[in-house]
Image 1 (cartoon, helix red, strand yellow):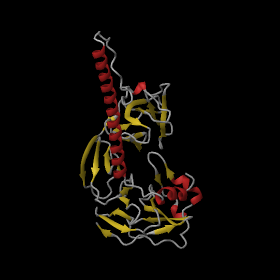
Image 2 (image 1 turned 180 degrees about the vertical axis):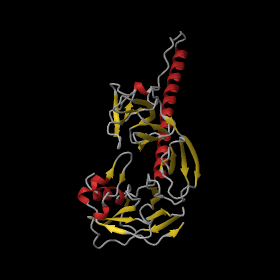
Image 3 (image 1 turned 90 degrees about the vertical axis):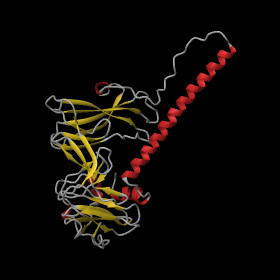
Image 4 (image 1 turned 45 degrees about the vertical axis):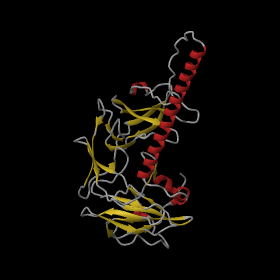
Length: 360
């Protein structure tokens, strides 16, 4: 990722990005279609073999020795344990994350495939191992994965550190988990999928199915879905710190707008300058900022920030040569607001800020 311009130009201007819900639904449908095609092909092969054997038996009355049943290995994943994945000669590391608070603690995801594909397809199984510098080690199974262009319905999960050396794994069956090196086994979380309305300031995190937002109660071991306004094509900023409220960027292509939670718990929206100006969410503000990057011209962008939930705005000139430092690839692709954004110079000839807030 060289700079914000190339990323925004190559992605957001060329293709109207679908919402998380649309992408996940499309991937699930594609996975089901491919699984059905594989099963159909296997059934057809078995039927063809049965018909051939039946034909031979009619031509030659003598008994034909029984043959072993054909093995459908293209859609089968071995029932490996986690220890049979981690560190095996034919396994490989998918990702490795280091604790931000405990440098000696790392989390590593391993993947092992029974039949690796030369085109980088791998219908296999993942395992997660967490270790620290004191000899503690936790190993647990992760999901069934496929590194080809069409991932499985369950996805590969999403890892986020939620405490000192404590990770949350957003996945279903198995999962969701809390993981740390000192645990003897992962903490299984209870999922409450019925959306619940919380007061302003509820902490948020990705839900186990990675659709929408949830709140995580570590002490009770519960993951509860948050009630969000039904605004189509909204990508929510995640996670938001305690006390910050919730906000998201809505609209695909035309008519972009912000959806921002207010202090009383309600939600309001504010319209952004319309296309052809692309907008990209800017997350991770240290002071609960609502912020986004917006293209002004082909070679110029602006950073728009609000500290009062969308009532007033500040427009700054982002440091484009160093913008790669404000891009986060793990646990998911995100643009971050510069930590010292208040020191950035005001934007000359900026685009207008978002319009007035309107209750939803």
